[in-house]
Length: 420
Image (tube, rainbow, N blue to C red; front, side, top):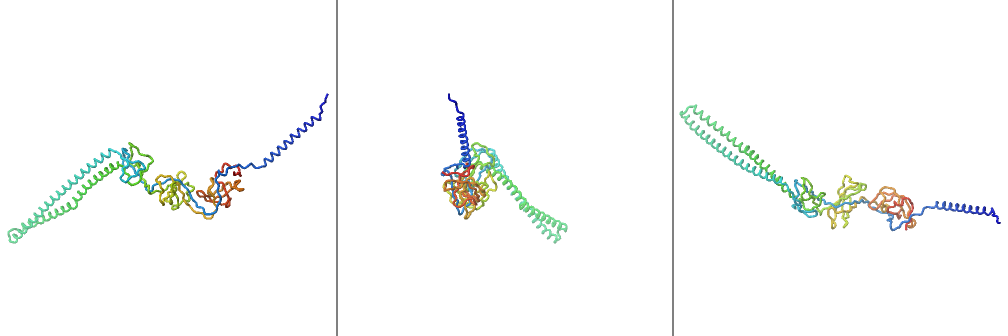
């Protein structure tokens, strides 16, 4: 019978304990070693990144805005009178002449008022003719009375001469002679009064009466012409030569329109300007007269800033650019364009392509390419003034440094990336 030895069991236990302790020590050492290592840099394909190199030279400061071409000569055609749309003769996009009828309206009340004004004018003109005849007859009657009065005066003078001779011959008394002279004086006084009355009537009273009658006719004619123009306004005409452009609220057949309502818009396709929307932060340095270029997607035309809107709408400032060169083919009102305005030129500076998140006069962290293009490390950079696609470098980069311009927000937690 074999008797187990206690020393053998103890030896096995000691051996196993030693293995466990050694294993724990090894695992702990490896863990400490690994924790001391930096995490592996994430990798990214170089072809997927937008890179640029810091350069020295002249940089043009520019701002960019999007907008559309607008006609400098724009005419709004309102409804001169109220009415109902009976016909739409010209559609937007068609060329029009000044007398081209665009829309026809109907308004029976205006037709009736025109006929009434015509009748009143006819009556006033007939009244003027009757007044002219009456005044002429009055003048003839006064002239006849005046002629008779002159004849009476002449007869009285002749009678006075005869009585004077007879008085000298002693044939009539002194009283008779006095009566004869008194009658002559009385008739001469009446003649003078009638002559003055005739002159006042002819030169003052009758002209005033004629003017009153003519004023009545003129008022009636003005009302007639007004009603006539209102009826003619029912045929809405373009007024100028150009292209009929669409309006915000198109007019439809049968629609009742009010006086002053916009019915059409006429533009001049040969005289255009660019109306750009520039972000308010970039518009602060824009001045009237600055040079600009307008890209119509079918050609580029030069221009200059002609107007700057004083107010901000939805974060943008409206800037008008007057076009100076020949218009590219296909240029027309409401065509979408992109405009670039030259603000200033910086001479002999460090500059680089504008990173996605970089702003003017800001300090930004970006990735600079190192180790012959194998890695990119996070680097703080102080930027200066900015243009459309470039930005001035104050510090943090040197001539020839290559940086990543693409969005790097996905690597905010790392300071180093590997370029593959």
